[in-house]
Each structure stands twice: as structure tokens, then as C-alpha cells.
Image 1 (cartoon, one colour):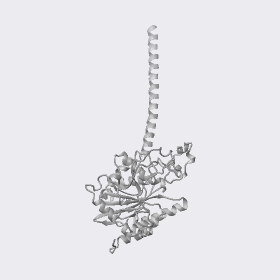
Image 2 (tube, rainbow, N blue to C red):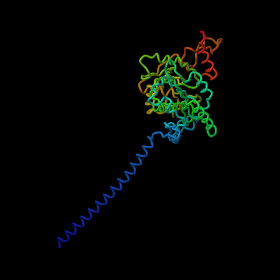
Image 3 (cartoon, rainbow, N blue to C red):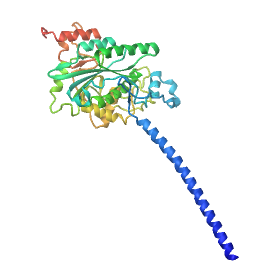
Length: 377
């Protein structure tokens, strides 16, 4: 009897142990299934974050639209800063925007881009049609100069809303059809987005034109003597675009502007006070292809600041590089010795590299004057 009870107790105990083990196995499997589901979701989420740009039917690289960061408005003083700064803070985290106009073969493809000696990268808003047309006929004309190749690209965002935006985009499409020289993204083309425009261009350059030797990064209201630019770049010893170059009108010892009425106003919500590293005025900068890609790489870990010239100086500083001054780049004004002389006398301009703030008509006139074979100075 004792043996039967003992055997029965052992069987009961064994059944309980087996049952408990089955429960544990079931719970473990259920847990692992949930973990697998979450892991797959995490992988999908990570993949969506790093998903490369897709191509539309027209071959344009395009990223999904970046959403507004509403938490930017949680700052107690957010409502007191200008709307342009608020808009910047809402989208500051965005590094990619849908591309509207692309030029994947502009440099002959990535492998052929080393044939581009000077790439003219000109910042231009959609409404500045007259400026672009004049530049195409003058200093930004694509050509061989001193045996090397000059290529031109205008970089742009969008302006306006509704019908106005559609009309301006239509103008750029017409220009693109005729000239094939415009990169355009679907973001607001405003002063506070100049840095975004530069980053988007540099990303495009890394993909489509990584071996271009040199770049002239300029606004569309400058007058540049690109003949002189080519001569200067060809005179550089031991630098064919594969070493550091970043030169222009050097600016140093500048702090963020705290004056809210200034167009360069930087509130503390954007950047804490402190001095900027040295930088070159954004009206016109000469840089090597090597330095352009260094700036792009550094930009991946530096929060976007509204003004592109200051931001590029920050990228250079992080890379341990410095900008330099060139007295042929005049982004403030050109010295004219007397108010009684013609300020558009070509003799004042034929030896320079670049002057900022020229009206289109005077760009057209000056280009013709400095190339007059009968010019005597």
C-alpha cells in the first residue's frame, strides 16, 4: 500500500513538474514571439530612417516630406521670436526634402566629374529669372577657359503657396528644359534656410559630382570675373582640388546678433551666445572639391544654423581647417577713389575675382566692357 501511494505521489509530482515545464515553455515562446515582432518593427523603423532616396518616373531623386517638430514651440518665449525663426526651429531637424529638379548627369556622372575644373554653384530663388538669364550669358557661361571646363548650377527652393508657388516652379521647369542647370528642392527658399540649401547641394555633389576640382559658391547678384578665377586656381602650387582651399572675404571675431530687428538675428533658442569661428562671407567663396566634401561630412554632426557662411566656418573648425582671405573677393563693396568718377569704369573691375551686389543690367554691361579688346586702363 505504501509503495502504491509513493508511486502515485511520484507520478503526480512528475505530472506537476511536466505541466509547469510546459507552461514555462509556452510563456517563453510567447515572450520570444513578441520580442521578434518588436525587433522586426524596430528594424523596419530603422530602415525607414535610413531609407535612401527613391527615383520618380522622371529620374529625380526624392525623399519623403519631413514633418514639423511641434515640440519646438514648447519654449516659453517661442511666441516672442519672429515667424521666420519659428519656422526654422520647426524644421531644423530636417536634412532631406523632396527634390523637384535634378541633374544627375551634369558632371558627366560621378566617374566623369574630375573633368569639371570649376563648378559654379549659384544660390538663386525661383523668382530671380532675370538674374539667372544674365549670368548664363556672362560670367556663368559654361565653356572651356584656359583649356579647362567650367560648369554651372543654380540651387533653389520654392517660394509662395498655391498658384504662386506652382507658377514659380513652372518657370524653373521651363528653364531646366532649355538650360539643364537647376537643382530644386521642396522647401521654403528663405534667408534662414540658406544652410539647408548648401547641405542639400553638398549631398547631391557627393552622389553626382564628387571629383569636381574647385567650386565658386556665390549669390546670383554678384559679378565674377571667372577668367581671373580660373587663372588664380591654375596658379595654385600642388593643389588640383585634392587639398584644402576655402578663401574669400574673411570675417573674424563675430558673435550672434541679439537685435531682433536685424535680418541676421539669432535668438538663444537657435544658438547660445559665443563667438563664431572665422568664416568667409557667403556672397562668394572659392573652395576645393576636397574641402566641399569635408564640410558635408562635418555637417552630419553639427546642428543646422541659419546662415550658411557661418555654418561652413563651424564645419571647417570642427575639421581642424581654416578659411583664408583673398583681396580679389569683395563681398561688401569695391573701393572707388572718387565720387566724381564712373563707378562702373571697367578698369576697376578687370583684375578682381568677384564683387557682390550687382544689378543684372550692370552685370551684362560690365562683362561686355571688361572684354572689350580696345579697353585701355
